[in-house]
Every structure is written in structure tokens, then in C-alpha cells.
Image (tube, rainbow, N blue to C red; front, top):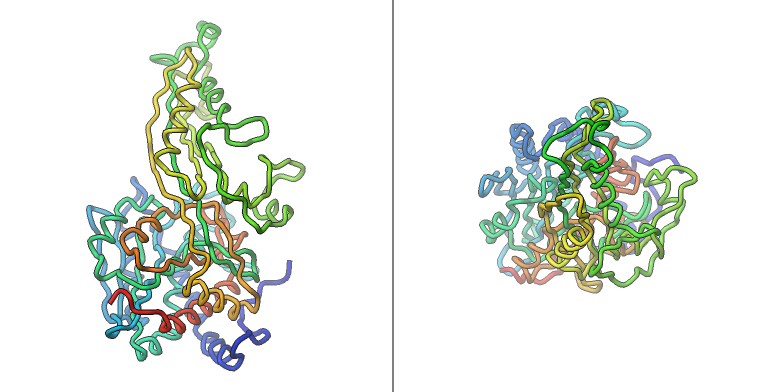
Length: 471
């Protein structure tokens, strides 16, 4: 792999080379401060999950509010609804008849997991080999800083042209956005826009941008298996009774067939993508152990984007260190099901629950606790906003953008489309396949970050050509 490039100095982009070169030159001196500001955000452990200290989330919101004020937005405030985490709204209203662009990102982050697994502490940002490491460095505090940096670059031009800009930085996306819908309904007038840019996705590869045109939805639940009222000696009682952990394992094993395909009846598949990825790249980026076969059949992109995928993401059971010679009376597992575009989350939930109930053994009591449901997303492939985005990305990277799906989920996009049906939504990314978002050693490629900022600035400059439909 080539050495990462921090700078924006490379061959002229298509379109107007002089204009692009001038914008690159103006962006270059802004990047060091942008990276320093990003490091300051990463240092704030803004985990919005239940059970974590909420003060850092508030401090993170305050830091974001100051950044938006410094970027020149006329109105900035920190808001919340129904006891939810603090979100930041910054805006400069549009002139009469002019369009408004809404820029979305989130300032909360995932928990870190075992700190000993990290090469450097997750909330002490560290640069190594052209990447910035730290929790939230990519997902999604880089998205926050991409918006801020683009506004530092072209905000005055937008204001002079009467183009409205609203920045909405959510504070609980990683925790499932529990108050997102009431929030955008409460602040509908302040958030209304013609174009919504969601900076919370990934690019195709380092050096190749992507526009995310589809997202899988998500359904999750906790399945509890009980075999006994209490733990008993495995030697004295084992045999007639199978422990709960064994029975849970057997139940979970029914969720996939021998090829690793999801075996839950009633789930749909979307059409296979027309683009394919290199298997070697996938293996490297996913960290697949050498020599292992991949699960499932069909193209990699179909398995990642347009087919259901089911994972067991947590189990409550005694640890190996604390294990005693007893039969485990009860055990629980959290199951996460990603669903393709076109699938209804409620129908998918019922299909999963029905499967578990049908495969419940007579030797155990099974209880299912339904959890999160998030809708999948499929974008309009052709629109004025898509054309503007493709042009901006091609200019910033000197190569065309790839239209991609994404295996992950951003359920609130469906809410945005329902509350703001006249708006165009673009899903863009600051991550790359090596970013390890949500994982250990999460990182941001700093050269790609620079190109993301340039692309967004170009897109914002062209937004004036959109109709001001929300006015």
C-alpha cells in the first residue's frame, strides 16, 4: 500500500482546474487547525450509552457549539428532548427563495471495549503513518470537523449568495438515536432543508470516493434460555439436564445453514449489486484469519449490502476464569440482524422471533426480548443533488465516485425522509475500509479527510443551483 498523503497537492481536477487549484490552496493552511480541533474532540469520552457518565457528552456538545460559532454560523444552540442527549443546531438562514443545506454528523461515540487491546489509549489521539487513532476519530467526530472545515473554507461565499446552512450534530446516534424522531419534529422549522448531507458513511477505498446509495436496516433482540431455577453440581445432576448455555448454543446454531447463509424463513433479499469488491481487499480490511473460508454464497457485495446478515454480538454466561463445575441455569444472547433495502423491520423481527420459538427445545424455556428496529434505505440513483455530489467528489479525488451500498445501518435516515419529504438526502463518508469504526484502534486517514473537506466545500458552493423548495 502506498504511503498516505496528508496534502491536497496532486494533478488538476476535471472541470475548472484553476478554480479547484485555488480552493485546494485555500484549504491547505486550514488543515492543521482542523486536525488539532478533531484531536480535542476525540479527547472527550462522549459515550451516550446508559450507565456511562453523561457529563462528557454535554462537554462534547459544548465543544461542538463553539466550533460552529467559530465557523461563522449566525445561530447556535444546544438542545434536547424527552431527556435525550444534547444535540447542537447551528444555522445561518437562507435569503428568500434560496436553498438551505443541512449538514448532519454526531458527536457521541461507541464504548471502547477492553482498553488493553488498543495500541494507544482511545481518548488520547495519536498520529501514526498518516492516520489519526482514537475513539471517534473517524466515526463520527471527523464528520463534525469535515462540516466545520468546509464552512471555514466557503461559509462566507454561501452567506453572500444567500444559501442557507444548518448544521445538526446529534448526541446519541451510537446509542440508537432514541429521541431522534421527536427531536426533528420539535425543531422541524429550524432543520428544514432542500439538501441533507449525512457525513456518517465510508468511502470505497483510500483514493476512491463513494456515494452511499443503500443501507441495510437493523433488528435486534435478546434471547434468554432457562433450564433450571438455580445452578447445581454438574457431576451430581448432569446428564438428564442440559445446561442453559449448551441449549442456547444449539438454538443459535439453527440461525444459519451449513453454508453460513441466514436460515430464518420469510426474510427477503434485494437485487444483487452491479459492482464487486476484491476478495483480498475484503479479507485484509476485515481481518479475516489466513486460510479461513468466507461464509455464504454469491458476490461479496450482495452478502454485504443486499442480503440479510445475522450475528450473535453478546452472550451472558460465566467467564472461563470464573467457571465452576455447575450446570448454568440461565443464559442470554443478543442477536443482531441486518436487513436489506425493501425489508420491513417489523416483519423481519417477527420472522426472527418465530424462528426462535419454532426451534425452542422441549428441554428449555425460551423468552425473547424484542429490541431495536431500524429501517433500511435506498436512495434515488438520479437526481440533481446526486449529480452535484458526483461532480464534487470527482473533482476532489480526481477519480469518479463509486455508488455503493453499505452493510451498516443509519435508521434515522428514514425519519429524515418522512419528516422532510421534499429534501434530497446524500450519504457521504469520512471513513475508509481500514478505519475500524466501532472497533479497537479506530482511525482516520488524514489524506482522505482533506479530500472529504474539499469535496464538501465544492458541493456546498454548487448548492445554490438547487431550488429553494423549503422556503
